Length: 488
Image (cartoon, rainbow, N blue to C red; front, side):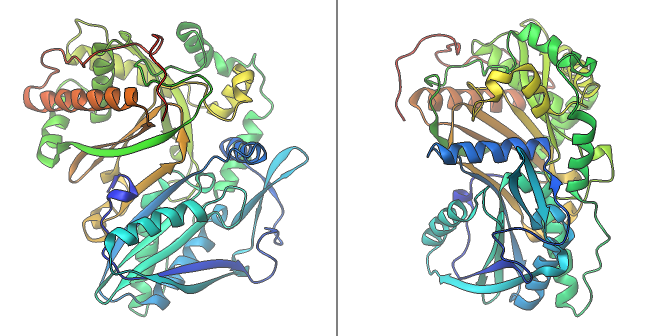
């Protein structure tokens, strides 16, 4: 299971069916059920607020996360309808609507028993290209942070197979929710198709997690000692956000259309050797990938000390492993990757930096941002290109042993950006990279050179157990240097 643009997913043509979620008790746009309102998490509150403000400024911010997977054999529509409905009923955040009340963003869940799904034939396609274009546009039009429901569900039906898709607004899920989606939907579908029951154990609610988080951190102020790690990072970094250190050709305060591309860095055999090389220096694969990123940025003209943001899952703090929601805390990480350090030394620095970060994981990113950088918090986007690194080993997800049958893939999309983000995934087929970055001539050059250097670096580790000779990029330029304005 890997992440790549939806445009790269080959979906055989067929008949498109979508399932419409509605409330049997109240008008769905009100989002009001019998359950009492709950307060949104910090992530959700900021996300909703940005959507409100951008809509009010006629400058809408749009994005989605999606998953696609395959069903072999003629689709049992009744069984899939029941499976999808049961999935939504199990996860309280999926049957919730958001609205602003008394200055705060409230979350109002509908009662599980008040939901119904209605199947609707949407269109038929005899061309994969036209089907792909339809799905891309469908997801863009269907996902709206300010409107319920906050996801869309459908399938492309063929006589002997089907491709199922679900696309979500980020406010209700994260990347680690995607393996949960395919495992639960397919487990229930297979049971129901065979005449059995969809017997999945109860799952905790993300709304409970959000409530606990707000109770613990809403009252803290900028002097709270738990912000010490953030303050020390800011003191060394010089500002709250760690800048992406290479030139992307962006103008201050401007957002750009994006490039969304993916590639494989290592095949399955190379990834196994790569992991062995990591273990020999008491490290883990994600540490070696992060260390390789730091070395490549450094050799391209970036600093010897790596500073960046890293999303970290918060599911381990309770019994949240099977819950759908936005269980992500974004944390700063820094380590020394200066010239002259060999692979083992850089890995030791990464390991120490990661350990220090994890020791201070408790304060939510949005809360730290609000308290320590209030002027930047008021903006609708991060202020400039930010150094960002994400890694997930999909082989460790529950249900991964069935991924070769279900063939799931994750897709992310955003309308605009002002920087670059890269996600790395390890699966049974190797190590992969998905990058979203601004569509400028400078960014295309910079990211193309960076990705090629990174590919050479990780392959060098797989071949020789080290970085090999220094990897330089063409025409390095630091982000602070001036370049001619490039218009997207």
